[in-house]
Image (cartoon, rainbow, N blue to C red):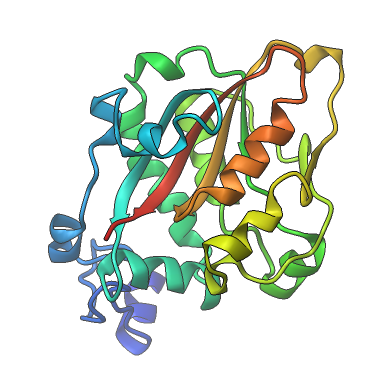
Length: 227
């Protein structure tokens, strides 16, 4: 009853197209859900994410759920998540992707889900890590422990989306560090993030995690930039 009254006086709109949502619609309208560009990376081990990191880091598996295109539905959704306080979008995408990832053989032996961390200053400004809901939802549905403490950001850098490829490369081996013990040796870590662009941030995080003896890395993201 209260939900219906709230929707009456404060109607919610689709973050993709801004049309009013129907009672049973959440975050995205039905049309945007059907039109959102999907990658289907989970269906093949030789997908675009694996190709992007080939020769850079030894990945067990990599995938993203959506294609990120300028002025597209996914860009609007990620913008609302990161800059307009719509933290609930993160968990929604995690719920969505978990259904596709639950049968991926390469993810059956994951030991920990690890989010790309925000610097404490950036997290305080935003109020949350935009990847946290995504990672926790995957952890819940895939029955894998969520560990936001093993990987941390030791330097505060400007927003990566404002840098060119050369500028992004300065994150390699300088920004991220790991805090691990012997119990983490030989474990398989699933690194999660929002959008893959050049891959520099994920490469830096992976290199930090690979300091753990015999560690294995997989990557899953909400979206991947698509030209």
